[in-house]
Length: 170
Length: 457
Image 1 (cartoon, chains in turn orange, red):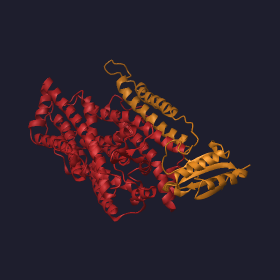
Image 2 (cartoon, one colour; image 1 turned 90 degrees about the horizontal axis):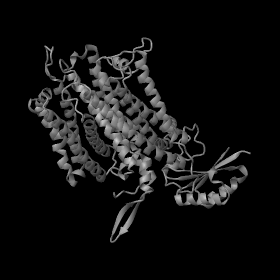
Image 3 (tube, one colour; image 1 turned 180 degrees about the vertical axis):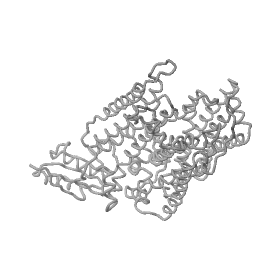
Image 4 (cartoon, helix red, strand yellow; image 1 turned 120 degrees about the vertical axis):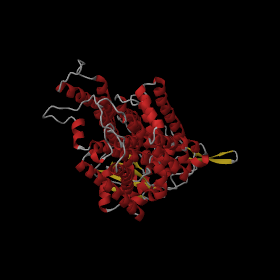
């Protein structure tokens, strides 16, 4: 059966937190609830679901990729055109480390940003259920539920003092 | 702790998006003037490419002049932007909020401008790509990784990419705010740039982590970049350039000039964009206190540079220092440099009244950058003014009109890019300001009610 998404708009964060409590009391699993706000609130302000993330993996992988590219670039170019200078070893390690260091850091930073976007579930092609007032200070409480539970969710949102309730059929 | 004015989210949106959502006449006038100066500089560059480097003041034995000085100068300016933002984000300093975006953006544009300088200096810019990037597969000829000519672009491109990503990541929530306030094609463009941002707790948490993680990753890059730039000098055999303190000396010099540039930028922003509700005396005061420490640390390294020369008494090195300190015009320039970059501003910054005066801080911060430009010129040119063996024709360095035009053009270019940025994106992070508003409170202590900051750890 298709799911329905509801969004209750609240001007007051206290009311929004109250709506979350009511929805949970009415048996809506916390994983199916979401909160949209125009600025960050302290973690757990609305009793929301604690997201699991693996962001730490991204800079590590990026650093390894960057280091490998740096090594390939510096060692590869010296080996592919071998020019022995003054009888010294072909690979000049100290300057190689400079380039490898920069590439390692670049890889780590690029992958961190990619990781942030991936973990934030961005980019999204469509905004879906959303209201522009959210960036004016309103809080949007989102409920993703089966069609037959939509009226219960609506009642809970209204009971908590939602100024408006929007609906999107799944 | 600052006496923050209480503003609603809607007020913050309105005030910080004023120039983004409408185009004031003064903005058009300033951008047009800056655009004309940039066009003039581009023409001067075209003329130089057509005529060759002979139209500059560069000649035997001085082949590094204004362009390389300007390169070091802009790399220096670029440094403080991300540094100040990263340190303040890492330490969660409350007063970071109004200054981080402008500082980070200045870093990006200053770095872009600095990258142009070696291209201009080469006279035939397309050749640089051949020296730097390993693309000549057909002939199997590669850049020499042992040369600072390769280290420099690698470091600067790393820093530029990182800084740009840093700016963009923190800009996403604000792009969503602009998306929600615009219509038509602008809404489509901002919608694409905002990547479908909703602002759920997961996204906000990641935004916070990104700020801290990227700051931690960018800070080592920041230190490495100006160290590598200093090695352009340090690995040469030119007297007075191969001093062991050059890397930290360059880094701290960059911070000194860069933080001063941040002060200049913030004061101009406050005036032009009417940001009185966001940038206060307390912010400038805090940066000025930081500047006293930075400037004094910089003076210490400058002193070390001189002491090492006096300690060794190496003949050629002493000749260079003699030129710098006692031979006009270098002695005069040296005097102007030290007076502008330390002797006038630092004692003045000791006074609270000066630190909290926008006028005083504007002029003293500008003075620092005049001094720091001269510092780089004095490091470079006198060191090269030596008649070496097998040099039969030689002369001193006098910058030509083309070089002066290009220097003025580079300043105009950074200002022009900043003005363009401010037209399309807010110079103060809106979401950070809103977050700051939520965390303030007042606490009654005895008979006084003092502002307090609620903070999560």
